[in-house]
Image (cartoon, rainbow, N blue to C red):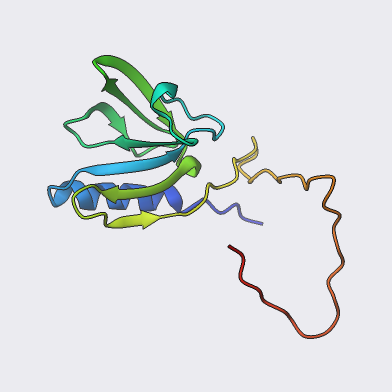
Length: 140
């Protein structure tokens, strides 16, 4: 069975290119608690950080690989940033807010390229599906 790659890195690159081609300032909203994220923790708020990834704000930006790498200055201090694409919650242009909101992180991949299974908490037993008509409900 083929292993399918995430479309998230491709969408991040596309919105980044669109924003810079149109003279906008691309930003990433990142889940700072995601495995492999390396950001200055003093700028993390509620587990998230917004990063300006415009060519004027960063050096050595690599959006072609996963994780995304670049060097930036935070309060005058140079910092090497690493962001796995699965940690990106949104990529957007600062000027108009246009871009893509992913809404949630992607599960980290295991060493074999497959997403790792998130274990079910012990207090949540699995229930067999109920027979009959399907039932949909809104989850907020």
